[in-house]
Length: 152
Image 1 (cartoon, one colour):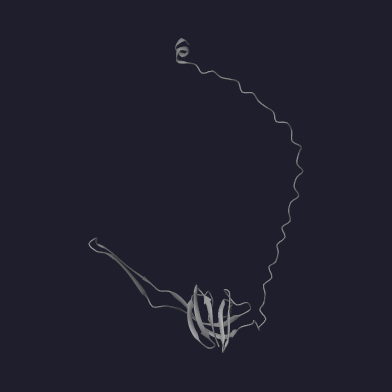
Image 2 (image 1 turned 60 degrees about the vertical axis):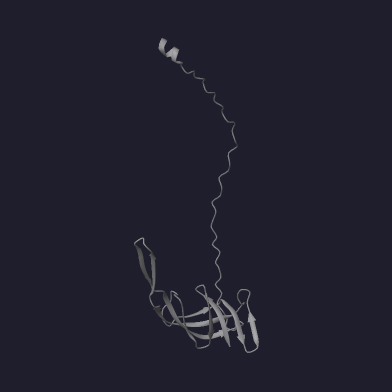
């Protein structure tokens, strides 16, 4: 029996007892988690494929350790322009061991019930009846012309 799971944006082929390095998970050593993004399960001639994931299927894995991958160097250069750049990167990984693969959710999974938060609304103040808008008339102002300014 083997399965294909998805975690960290990548897909992995797993079997019971296999050890693999996946993208870093924020967990401690000896923690157990269930990965529910199971894409495919093959058990002999029985093949189950999800669209995109299988309902109720999960893989139980145990975290062994947090590690880092080998260093990768990225080197950029532009010929005849005196431009060179060297950069290194070490990807953080989590080493996990597959404990079991379940195709039908045989183990009862604890469902987290979303608690609805009821916010007490303040009673709205009664609206006052609209009063007629007061209209104001602006006084017209005349601008003095240059000839009037000279006389003044």
